[in-house]
Image (cartoon, rainbow over all chains, first blue to last red; front, side, top):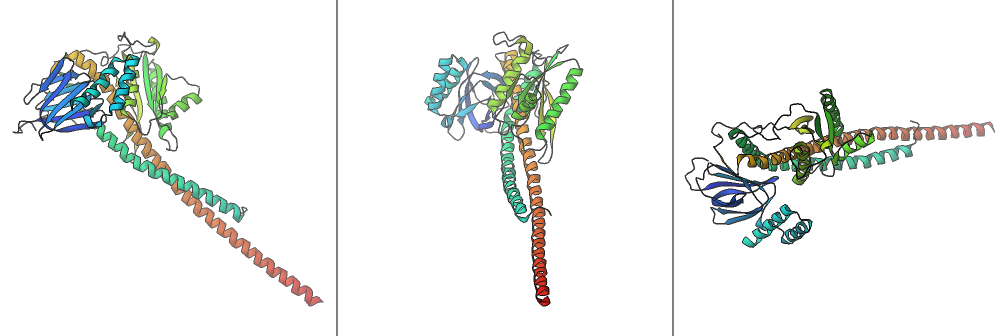
Length: 128
Length: 309
């Protein structure tokens, strides 16, 4: 795995109860506590906190994977990228109506984190 | 033999009905175990990566964190007891409760107060029936725990542990605990499940169950925003993930225990049916024999009386 010649990253997007997506990719971008980052091959080892937002993965088979994640973290080492979030969902798994009502509910409750989580899911839907 | 044939037939019918029910429960439990094991397998990658990340932070930074720091003089221990919501699973819940009592005795002998947190209706019932006190209980998910259940429990427990310095969401200081133990059932195999106790807090970070291979050395990570903040965010998640692991193990154990209990109930019902059928047949035979002898006796009496005339 460390010595593969192809210029790709091994990416795993993992939620607490399942592996959401895993495969080879050329680029991963995510929103961390410090701002948006993009990860290409041979990135320095990094462990960073994610805020609720969108993760974009440019997979090697040409497709772009977009997922909404909650707060979690991303770790990069040896061209392996692991994105961990207690709850993560791919764009086609997102229920827009449900996210919308969650957003309104969170806004009504003044739940900032809830607002961020719901917004991330809606934003992922738009970005696809 | 005193029972009449009709009574025995009724007994056989009711035992057959019971057997059908226990048989169905056995099959349901068996199919759910497979699902529970799949859930456990699906949760493994997250737990593995999380453990890796926590060990990375712990190895490369000397960050002291309240969740990992041993108290000098622990006074209070929180105990999370994980049992099932429903019975009919043999000794599953009672052996966990027995283990919890043992742990409670031990902790009290060490001079610590014990606060109980319960998961599962059986534990709740046990404490309520004995008029014992507990802090909170969570029910309704014992055979199919979701991550959100683990998160709810984890957040509550982490709060009681870290309450000393978490000012914004401070809890009742009377609940502040110095250590946290979890009593649950380890799923060893379909045949053995053992009640087990782990100390969750203060944390001792261990590298999963699989030891890291030599080429799997942890790289020198750069931590953003800082090692301390990363650890701050990671450790509560690690606790949640450990609790999720315990819940999943407990769920698989509960189902396995239920399957075993229901299997022996079905076998017993079958034995009873056979026994009752034999007795009923005997009673039927005895009835017939009696009737014949009565008829023969009657005929003889008639013949005697007519011969006299």
